[in-house]
Image 1: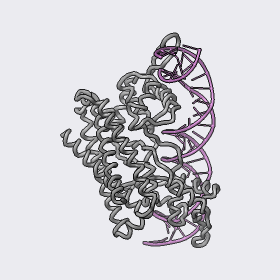
Image 2 (image 1 turned 90 degrees about the vertical axis):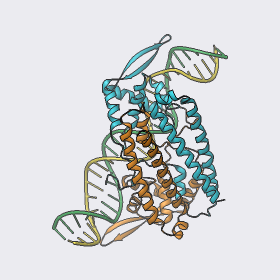
Image 3 (image 1 turned 135 degrees about the horizontal axis):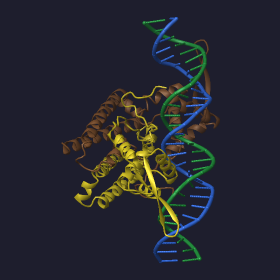
Image 4 (image 1 turned 180 degrees about the vertical axis):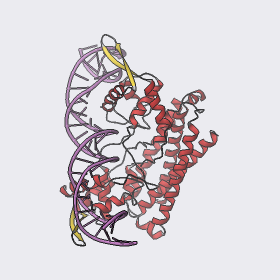
Length: 191
Length: 191
DNA sequence: TAGCTCATGTAAGGAGTTACATGATTGG
DNA sequence: CCAATCATGTAACTCCTTACATGAGCTA
């Protein structure tokens, strides 16, 4: 099988990015699997999703591999939790990943876009409702992201302390805003 | 496990979209597995990728399920190929998929964006080269997409005949153009 | 006749989702 | 005391990638 990659070719790959996200989250502070699971709901949820059934086994693998270690904490009478932190090796691995090139474009995998591909004619009656639905969806997303920016980055200090996170939030807001604008233009064209 | 989906929550899901893409491609004309494989390299490659090892088994499943049928063609002396076409059931299934709502946002899974998340400071020396690399990548992509538009949609008739495809190509060009503009602004800020 | 393209498969394994399973803690 | 949350796992399954495997047709 040809591996890739005429220009414009786009691959997804099987590179276990989740492990690096976990290392990255642990680089900020020691955390339990439960903490990490929640982080994917709010902290970094706009950019990556993972559930606990994927996280716990991966934590075990990372510990076996020497990238993280854990300390047992007891809450209350006997509830044990495992607080994980990076080893120097894990920190090195994280930094190596960040430093390595990212030369690949990722396919978007947007259902709506895919469906559009098979709409042959501008007169197709399904077109207008599809666009209206996406407008709603992406307008809501813009609002959500703006609210996130408000709460996560209320001050200039907050921005300076997590600059990259700020950048990608800004980028997501712009992307969604442009998406909305494009949809609005299509809705107008299709009157 | 909680299923989803605070606003801004984003899922990927396991809904076998590939089968619908195959049905969609077959709705345009009868094709072999090999033809479909090539279509993912050039026809629809900007929006979805699949390799023959995924396509051939899926074609078998779709035929078993009654969505497609095949006819054996002989090329030359004895090379058999299987030309697949939609059954009425398959066509109905395709149209049902297109008509059903697409209420979910898809996570972007962009490596660069992910790495940015873990860049804490605007002074991080890795930031500038990372942005420069992505600039190159996305500028190339804009060029590639514009060239595609040139070749696939040279005339207004071509646009009218595959309007949805035209729309998503336009959309991809805009998205990538805005991405480049954003990267340029970051590069300027970071001087 | 050698190399490339056409043509169709299977196998092995990793990534990700959904579901199953269990138990402790805390706050109303 | 009851419900929500905290906390950690395993099992089954689908999707997708990479690699293995085979053979025919075409063209220089």
